[in-house]
Image (tube, rainbow, N blue to C red; front, side, top):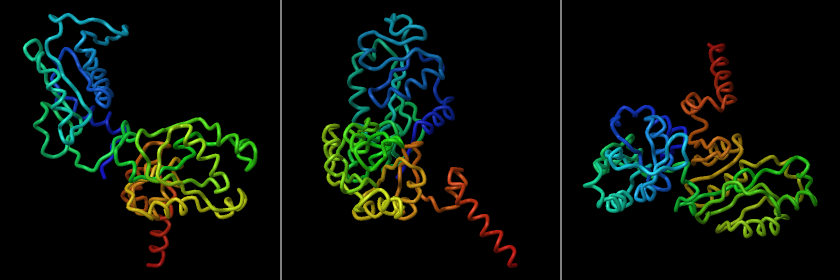
Length: 311
């Protein structure tokens, strides 16, 4: 699996910015995923930008103005930007939409991420990224979410405040009225939570009220919060459900739990605390590159030190 978050997108554009000529008059984004890279390119190139539909109606966006008409004489060379190309059908449709303007404007096309073999579909591409792949800016609408597991608290909804987490009436009120966070536009395979089984009814009511579609809901079968705290097996509980089917992704809110789920399952985990994808949490290379799971590095360093002492 290949994954790119918004930080990666920004870095890729900055690193390859020189491939874009500076004589473009206007940057046009392909809604919706192409709007983010188009906005970034327009920012760094200091050019006005708009979306395709606004472009067709003569609107652009400039600094200090919400929207303005453009004059044809001042806007001849146009760069159309999308975030990615996979099959290429979206880019073909885009070109067809703008075909009637080719005599009026000099239109070029760009995509930030392109699958191998599709590079020539655009005039400028920034990085070749093979399938399967996920992007932070559209992962919640990905068609493969039925092959994914989702946590609830911190992912689908906000975490409870300490005073709400009383394993009683306040907690029930929280479950029924929790503020939604990252609501997917596609059906989820399995929702896996450390909420207790006794709160299934309230949880299902909230999921239905927020139009969250899913196949299964796995909860923790323990009598109360004290038993859950004593077991302290959140990562193991979630990893077990993740491994029970051929799922390809787990979306978890808490970083240490995400690392534990990955360690046990050996499968990717997306952490919504920073929208980083955790692939091999136990590998030395992962920890050196990420600089995030420092306890592992300290543990590894102590092992090396002990081996040296024995020599």
